[in-house]
Structure formats: C-alpha cells, structure tokens
Image 1 (cartoon, one colour):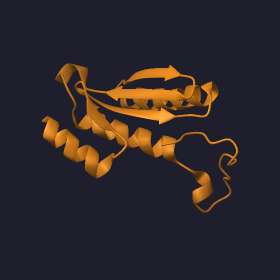
Image 2 (cartoon, one colour):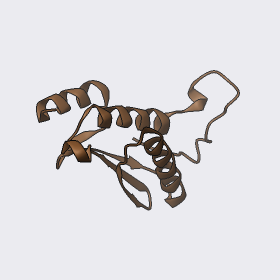
Image 3 (cartoon, one colour):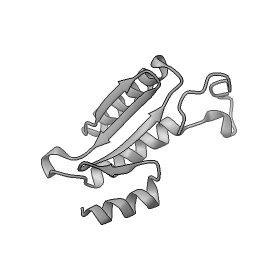
Length: 113
C-alpha cells in the first residue's frame, strides 16, 4: 500500500490511528498501570489469534501500538484489519448498549481516546 492509500484508509476507518515510520500507530490512554497491562493482554490475545504481532510499548497510563507486516516490509490489509479489531475491543463500552453488562464505573475508566 502507498502512504496515500494508508492515510486514506485510516481517515475513513481508524481516525485515532496514524502513519508513522512505516507503521500504523495508536496511543491509548489508561488511568493506571493495571489498565495498560489489561489492554496489552487483550491486544496480545487478538494478535495471537490473528497470527499477526504488533509492537507494544507499555508504561503507566499509556499503551502504544505499532503495526506493520514484517514479511511485506510495510503496512498491509492485515495491519488495518487487526487495528480495527483492537479498536473495537478496547473501545467497547457495555454500559452504552442494552443488556445486563454494566461496564466499568465512571470513576474508574478503562481506556481513553
């Protein structure tokens, strides 16, 4: 994919992601270390299930994700698909949809944009 194609895809489908240094990247804010680790674990599960492995940087209150397809030497549809799945899982808010799941209390947010 060309940089222009990637930027257009991100703008259309993944507005919180950016193209940087040959990868698509997203920084997630978290309220604490525990939340950053939980988010990293969720991403690890998704990546392993997809057999596609991101680079993660974890610190207190922050999780950074970088995706590119190593054997293709750049960003591919695989990266965009995994980014979309990561976005859907980490942004899921059970409290915003009908059903018995309440979600995290407002005083303890899990992920911030």
